[in-house]
Image (tube, rainbow, N blue to C red; front, side, top):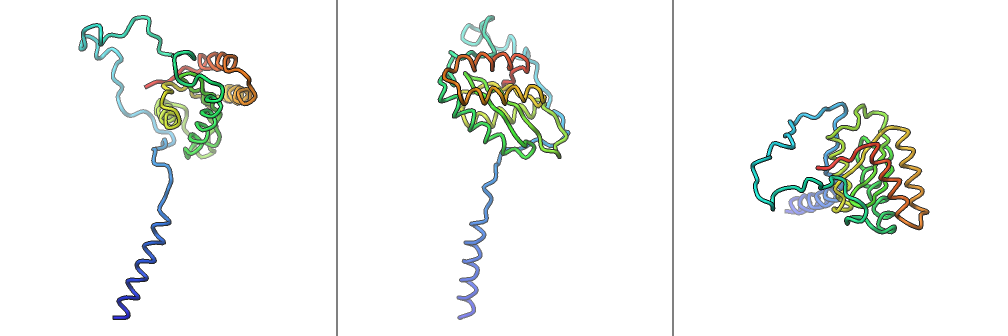
Length: 188
């Protein structure tokens, strides 16, 4: 009888210790090095004609790149806080060594520096992962401009430093928009 209670006590202690060792690692998928996009993409016009009526149509002059005044991150304090938190979230990806983020309006400008073992590049799959990570910080962000080009990453880093000491978001947002136009904005 004494052996049974001792065994039960040891099992309880072991279970408690193992519960403390449970992983709190990120559960978002990270890209496989060198993998290419495997899922076929539907044509953007594939649903044309399927939905009729003015409520289901997109205005011909609708912009796919929202501007600063259209919601999203509109204050300097929000931009600083969101940019920093987005950097932290993106650095949890195993392929990423360092990130630089400037978030304004509904878009985030992202410069990535990869780890030495990552052999892939910035493709749509990686951009989708970056957008997902960014949206864990701020759901109003609907687009990301992602690059790993050294020159552009340095410019994003300099702009992120400018954001930290800025007194107005307007100048930073204008520079961010210029860089985003060079990279292109990924949206889902």
